[in-house]
Amino acid sequence: LGNSPFRKYILGLETKVPLANGQQTNYINFDNAATTPPLYSVIKTLNDFAPWYSSIHRGQGYKSLLSSEFYEDSRKIVLNFVKGNPVSHTVVYGKNTTEAINKLSYRLSNSEGKNVILTTEMEHHSNDLPWRNRFTVDYIKSTDDGSISLADLESKLIKYNDRVRLITLTGASNVTGYKNPIYKAAGLAHHYHTKILIDAAQLIPHSPIDMKHANESEKIDFLVFSAHKMYAPFGTGVLIAPKETFLNGSPEYSGGGTVKVVTQDNVYWDLPPHKEEAGTPNIMGIIALMEAINSLTKFGLDKISNYEEKLCNYTAKQLQNIPDLKIYNTKKIPKVAIIPFNIKGIRHDILARCLSHEAGIAVRNGCFCAQPYIQKILKISPGEIKRHINNTELHPGLVRISFGMYNTYEEINKLIEILNDISKDKNKYLRKYS
Ligand code: PMP
Image (cartoon, rainbow, N blue to C red):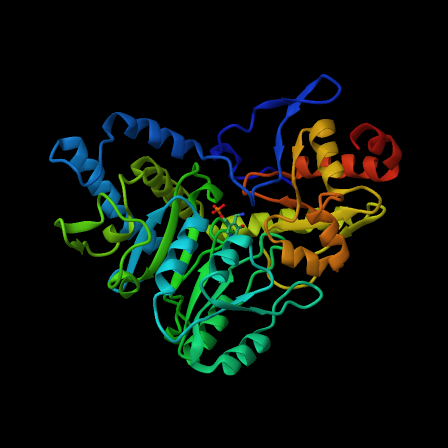
């Protein structure tokens, strides 16, 4: 079965964590959809750059000029990574995907007439809630197995006619891993005279993205993603958008760095992206992102996704032999390396606790900030949701394994072993962890 060819590049995999029995074990991280551990090269680059960093756009000192140059050049590197258009696109930095989507929602809400956002039932809350209070939001239906239908998207585009401001959908679900047909959806968007945003938070560490696409009518207009899901630390989010999005009007946040001239009576905004980046920029976050892009490009995202797909298929096959275990993404469509599951008779939080305390295995449990999608997949009744709102019952949910390029078959075998044990001797674990 072999080891991961990418394992040697990841920092912190030799760390030991305590178990319930007082012993220690290697930490096994199957929660990569939440955050990936950093690459060695990213941390080394940060260390190397630390003596050199200084304030961006705010000084003529050598270090300040150097930092500013790296910062501005990085936008070209980001665009090159996702094949954005260096002439028509601008790259706006913020702290994460959530902030990027909020920022875009704020800016798009100023246009008159087009007040409908079409999104899907499978979105992360970050690509749902920021639209709700500024637009009429309608949801492209997901089928019972959790995938979305382009036919439903088209019928909604026809229904709302010219009122659709934007279609926004995730590149891949953080619950089922299902990849959406983003280029086909982009084709529909343009055919019906609107634009498309792809939430690439889950897609970016697993799959090459081509905003310009071979077929011009299927190009991606807007893209967002976070560095902390692609082997760099926290604090950096990317919003790629057509420049004209930000030309008129005022930014959501204003302050230092956003203006050309300020008088007592007037403000003359700078051009985008500066207009949209209030305050001193996070140069260390950008340096980390640049090294992550450099490394992922060197490794090859195709090679990474091939390896992860094999891990995922192997795991799914093993899980199928575990009594009472149900997997929730069995549809044969392209997906990123995620497996959501449950074991009958054990609540998701208890199961996740068992894995951590008995085997040092990190997974995520619950609704993964995608409650409407989970409610649909698990067919949760309004009564159950109400009991959760009233704090009398835990919201039903799932356990999620999400792979990174460094996970190994050996780690998977450990997971399968403990899951088998839990499933066969539920009472023992329920007594211990309920
Ligand atoms: N969209 C998707 C699909 C995600 O998985 C996540 C993170 N779980 C986000 C958006 C939000 O990302 P962040 O927390 O970095 O803002």
